[in-house]
Image (cartoon, rainbow, N blue to C red; front, side, top):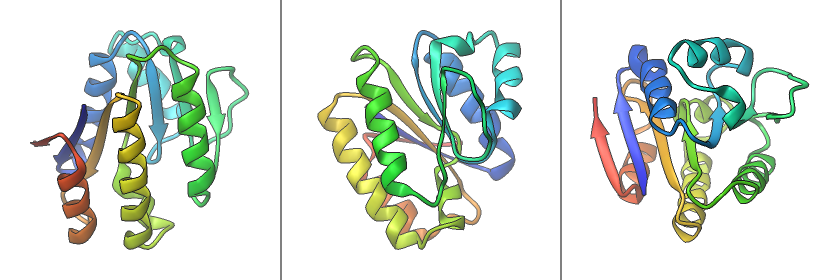
Length: 157
């Protein structure tokens, strides 16, 4: 199931931390707004064992075994990293994006919408639980419409 959480920008981090905590067993976290070094301590304070998760970090650089570093500018590489990470985990692993709308800083919103459609099709085919978090403010209306249409469940917070 793909869940889209649309929230105020100041609540994006809280929504991300709570989403990861909800999938405390295992998953893949795609970090677009904050680096692993910024998020790891916050997750541990929430009782999340970060070693159970794989992190795709688009902002920092870490040498840890559970962190893959990739540039936000490389959507193809990001897609490949997500695919490889999910396939390396058991079927019930979750995928959580910390702030999907952040991709529009480096890319045109039409390109991000196309990436979202592609990603959502694969997530549904893989039967992966996913949480996509976007900020209400500043998210392109067309992108938000594509995300809402493609998600199985939409939560406005």
